[in-house]
Amino acid sequence: MSIVRRVALLVGYDGVPFCGFQRQASGMTIQGALEDAWYQVSGEKVIFHGSGRTDSGVHAIGQVAHFSTCSSLLLERVMGGMNAYLSDCIAIKDAAEVPLDFHARHSATRKTYLYRIAIRSYPPALDRGRVGWERTPLKLDALRVGLRHLLGAHDFSAFAAAGGNSNSTERTIFSAHALPVRGGVNVIFQGDGFLYRQVRNMVGSLIEVGRGNRDPEWIAAVLDSRDRSRAGPTASAEGLYLLRVTYPTNPFCTLSGMTARSYPGSRI
Image: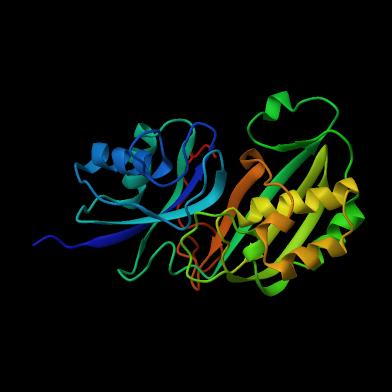
């Protein structure tokens, strides 16, 4: 009788060529690529579950996915074999055996998203598809004041796009930062979860504040309204990255805090 194992993967990807994480009837997806690669390695047809269904064009540095398998293949072989069949746009960065009740999405306690904004007068040709773009400088102090209104537990209906399948629109944002970097600004959110396109919608509204089109207090008014039509436009997918997924116990770390297994072929 085969013994079932559950394996968690740390995955990075460039979302530009893909129609999001979730497998679809047509178009390339991250889930589909992972499942196809594992089939090539093991001959098993299994379902890969991700920590979140990133949209078309959205990237990941620290996406987590899990799958159940009867294969006894060593974790290093799982990583190496799958990376050999994946395109250069996806990389398995680490693998760990986890308890059978571990779930990449439901076991997560926090998620961290990064939004990169390039600020320059000319198009970001070398970063095309990987950053949002503003032609003129943003008012960073005003943007940071606007960010503060998003901290804490709120009903984020005003920043949720139609089409989500969440039972509740209440979420908690634990931290939010706007950090100046060379050539632009990075906006980072950490929360217990995010609604469909919530991060992109919050960033779109914050950009309105940074441009000086709105006062920072407008963010609080939009939040209280619970009305999506009151908020700013949705920021482009190109600048968004799933940076990190947090679990009660990090499956990819040893007691020393270092990754349990590193694979020199990881590309993202």
